Length: 52
Image (tube, rainbow, N blue to C red; front, side, top):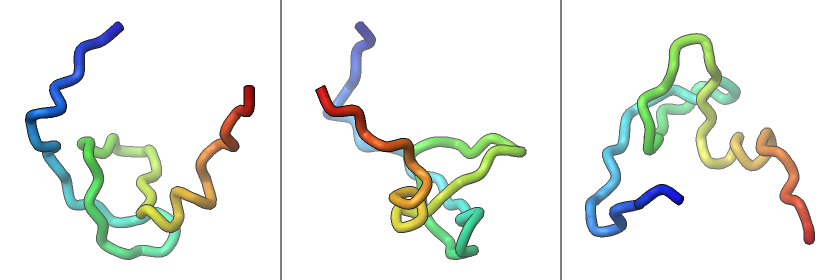
């Protein structure tokens, strides 16, 4: 398994939501050609959670 450093603060990057056009911050560097969603729009687009 990968190691995560929870002590280090996340580096946030400013982006524009592909759905609503609002400016937002995301914890990754957006890749050109791939959509970026704000928190509200991500809830509409994310895959359903699997129930075990």
